[in-house]
Image (cartoon, rainbow, N blue to C red):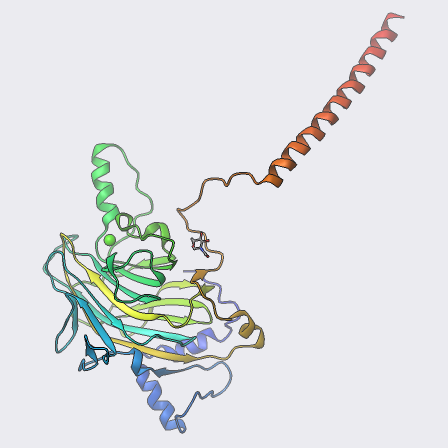
Length: 361
Ligand SMILES: *[C@@H]1O[C@H](CO)[C@@H](O)[C@H](O)[C@H]1NC(C)=O
Ligand SMILES: [Ca+2]
């Protein structure tokens, strides 16, 4: 996946620094290095991460419940177990969600998601997957992996069922149909929405996706993780699903503008097909990065999510109607051209007449 990293010169350096999956190890190191109070920069370009307990969730799940004092609220069929939080059981037509009650005002952060998707279903007979959210609204059930459509914020989807492919197979039987670039499922994708776009479930969100990758995550006997990192408006999604304890790239998008004060959450839905969708832990780290004065200016707060230079691949709108000015210019230049053509025509005609006159004399 090609990505322009722009001013992030020390990206590689701190990426390595962050590659340790368990950020608390880094925190421990920090505590050993110094007082551990406040952000500490050791040398230029280094980044440290701090676990934010108010946005994190881990065993034992004490802060989870329905009360207003809980850090995390459950919804729908979600259940707290001793070893995990089950968003949906492996049963049809269930949906569940888990939402952080505290809005997040961090500028740069990293969310590490330890999850497990498993069930009885064989190839392509399981679904539908889970989503991880950073959105303006929370606790709004709906059709997008159990959350509301036309959400405002970021959604990251671990989609286990290829709806589009299945539909195309049906269509292919009726008439010849050449599918586009095939995506192999389970598939991770990301979408940023200002509340105007619908997630197209029938097409697995393809029309609005920022990027994606295949992630074979079902029924694995080792731990699976996903990390969403948001630093200097750069969104990076990586996964650790091979049991090798290293992050593998999935999505990298620069110029992602996300407002502060949104909520983290995760949700899941089953339909005709089902799976157990379990969340084992959510760890949110505050990342401290240095910004140049220009970056400070560039990275001012925004009020609506957006992505710079975003061209949705399959949303090429019909040509916009001509504006008044464009219409005027077209008419004007047509007139000029016509006059020009007539003048040239007259000149040529005169020349021709002159020549024919000469021929006669
Ligand atoms: C919201 O997003 C859509 C699609 O990306 C865009 O066309 C629209 O202009 C955006 N609205 C605002 C208010 O930015
Ligand atoms: Ca799907």
